[in-house]
Image (cartoon, rainbow, N blue to C red; front, side, top):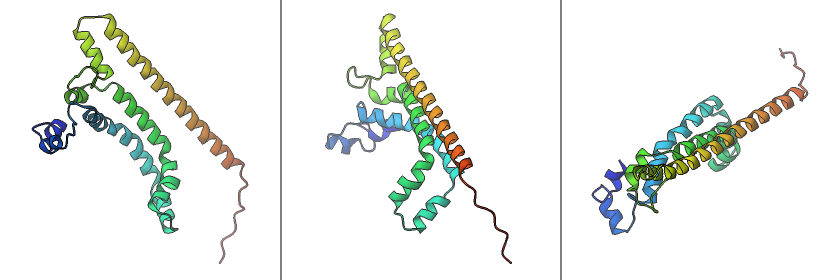
Length: 181
């Protein structure tokens, strides 16, 4: 899709060339392809959280005079921050190992459009067994760091929720009043 849109013979190709903007076989194309492939991981985390939260709080904030940005930063974002963070971590994990889409739009230009997985493939095809193993080990180490970060954030989220529940249980309850006739 990106090659058909932004390539030299693509829909926007002549305009991009006239303005000396390079997307295909350059970093912008790699970023676009990675975002396109990994965005569903963020959506997969955010959609259920947003559905469970509902829109009542946002509507109340808007009714009370908050602007759209104020509503987002003070109402929406705090309620979805953990889902967004998990989605970004999953997105990062997927992006680190992305091969297919990035391979198509990058052009495999050494030193300019190489990613770690593309470099592993190049080194593997050069029949040097130690080099691709070393680079793949770096990729595995980055994956472990990502997994550790995700685990730490989950622990922190659970701790925050438990603390919130304790505070809610310790707060004095208002006495219930009998209904007024």
